[in-house]
Length: 137
Picture 1 (spheres, helix red, strand yellow):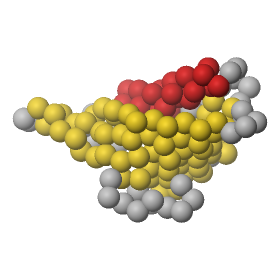
Picture 2: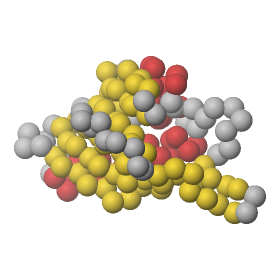
Picture 3: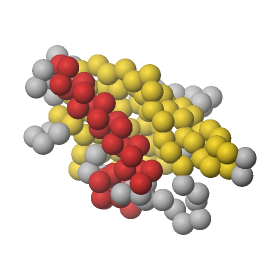
C-alpha cells in the first residue's frame, strides 16, 4: 500500500468504529482492535480484544441509542509504514423529546498498527471535551 491507501484504510477504520458501536455489532467492534490492544475511556482501561468486546463493544440495556460523528481527523504514518498515530474529534448525538442533542464531545487519541489483513487500533484513548489529556495519549 502507498501512503494515500494507508490513510484511506485508517479513516475507514475510524469510521467503522463509530458504525459498529452505534449498531451494537460487538464482534465487528472488537475486531477493529489488535489482540493486545488497550482502550481507555472515562478512566477505565480495557486490555485485550476479549475485554474490549465484553465491556465496550455492546450497548448497555436501558441506554438510548445514539450516533457518533467523527471529524477533523489527522493521521501520521511512521516512516516504516507499519504504525501510525491519529487524532480525531468526535461528537455523540442522542435523540431527545425535543429532537436531537450532542451528549458528549471530545477527541480520540489513537496508535494504530498494520496487520496482515488490515489496520487496527493498538491503543485508543478517549478524552472528553474539557478533560485533561493523559501524557501517554
